[in-house]
Image (cartoon, rainbow, N blue to C red; front, side, top):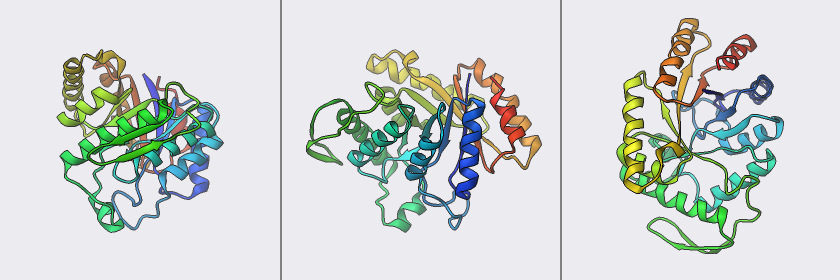
Length: 274
């Protein structure tokens, strides 16, 4: 099982850089941040912007893959997002994993004046945006007239270091989202809510969605995001003890999301779980 580490950009830059460098040196598969403008529990929590933070992460690491888990499709036009992703892929020398989802943080949208459509529309927006982004990444020019987005002879140069494009990681688990994941994703990520059964059920529904469109479900890596609270050693132990169970169910990648910067000892322990 691949082991990755995540820390939200809600801490001082020096603490973030120390975490990235340590995780990179310890050999984690990937290092992640998140794409929000607020703290998730408290809107007043100081929060650095996710993609500019990711560009910095790409520059100071050397071997781990990097990404946002995950970008809301509602925050940026897909052509802009496609260009941002390509830029980060060049900064890191081809180590970007492109994490994306339909978005959920309504308060952020309302506060910033960003439209927050209903869930079905956001999923449809994600499907259309990924169609546009993949075309921009692989075609010389793109014209497109859709329900949400319009492009007229749009160019996206240079292309990514990775070919045909950076791996697409999509978070979500509802039926409509799983159909989008089946069409577009190289990896599916599920945010753990304390239920192994929930992960397994969603993974099985993803298999069915792949069968519906004729895609081999084995082409999509299965992953889970687990939350760790470094100030609660017992909670850390419980979460770590669940990893073998996830692996038995077919989970291939775990993202350990730290709610506070971990000690080097805890980070070393997690790096050696595989």
